[in-house]
Image (cartoon, rainbow over all chains, first blue to last red; front, side, top):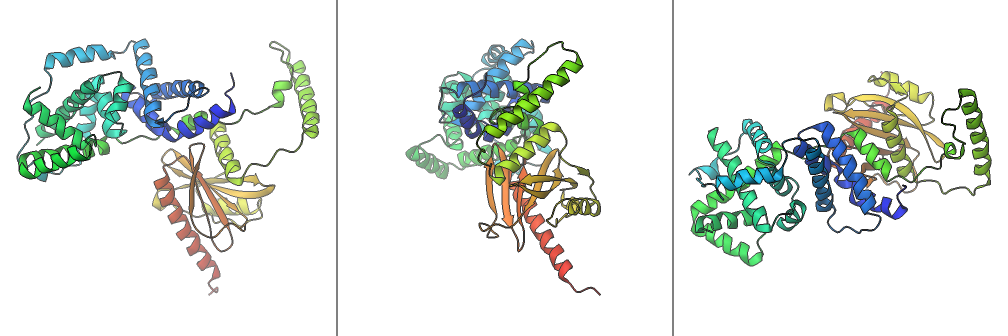
Length: 177
Length: 266
């Protein structure tokens, strides 16, 4: 089917400016460049179809939500260990919020370049539910409300996932000290 | 929810810009009264900033971007669509039908009113996308400006500033010619990582005032500027910050070259 001119115009305005973020997010999700390309392509086709009838007010959040849903379907189909529910189960066992033990000189301490790698690994190792929530917030700048819509989780859950993800990464940096 | 958890979520909401003005004011007051809280807050900010450095937004591969941009391009009424299809036709019949298609297509075209010409910017972005999909962005492949420059000079009426910016991280990949507004114009192709910047020189028009203008079209970034006797348009899939860096280098280089050329020969 050929998209209408209106849909193509909206696609240009809404989707293309956020293509890098869509790809980046898909890659963080799938941990694989080739999969990320497939995911983004599928998401773009869905976006184009949706734009036939839809006006979008929050393009970034809207597109990332589509990417997230496509990625989830894609990964489930690929039979990867990507069940969000399983991840959440792990989290419930860990208790709600981890103990928060700030170091006294924390504010003075600069986060060194060699810690970049451990942060990168730490983020990649987070359970999917935490990883996607933190990525949407810290990297893509989505509001709690938009993350709640994108991940189909209540705002309270978004907040506690964010806190857990951040506390896990902060702990990781602390270990390297 | 314990008081400690409550405080963590409060701090986080402040960090994420989710507090309203009153809430933020209260949080700042709490920070002023509690050095530990203030320390935790700056620590949290530092972790987030480090995370953004560690996991920055990646650029979509150029080939993916080109394919997705093509989704938004107006459908092409190719004469192939009019040609009858023979799924298992022998090659001779295929060739014949293509020829019929060409003739019929050409005939139909001559009856249509002339379509409005695309703007130079639009035409250059289309050229960029077309060459990206086709995989052949240059007609002359060389990183040597002394090869590219004469090649272009022999084909396009405009003199080209084939600058070598490899030392600044923008190696020259080659050049090609484009036809814009019915004029043959030279295009230089530079590389940056796996990305590309196409710089096209255009005849100076009345609108050009030397001021750099940045724009984006179909998800690509454009820069337009001019010097004393030429206008330039750069098209790229790089972020616009890097395009600006490139343009700054290119302008400085072109200025240097012009001054060299104007120096009396020793």
